[in-house]
Length: 116
Image (cartoon, rainbow, N blue to C red; front, side, top):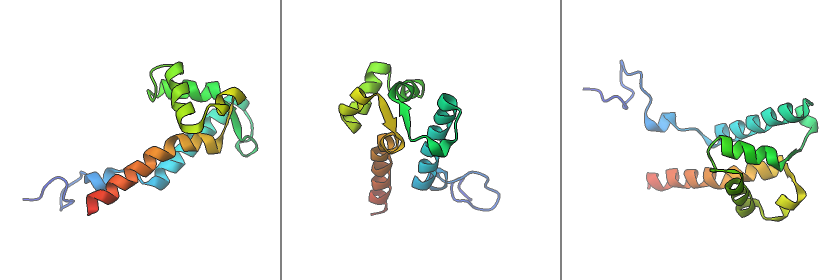
């Protein structure tokens, strides 16, 4: 008998390994989220905008349930990027990307650890 995750003949289910999102795919998702917000805020050419108001990102973190409310979202940003960012009021793409890198690397390390 062929198990649903073995990928045998007649199986249309993906194994957990096949269903996982790669780091490259995750980076593409982060970039597309950034680009969507740039278009919404500035209605400008994406390549010409490197910063967004931090309040846009805080609202995004709340909307996507990364944080319960705007204050908790501020804490997430400050813990990851530092308090100076909150005083500036703007966030660059590199800083936005850093918000997600720790989780991406943690996930990658867990995958590596499972293979040993």
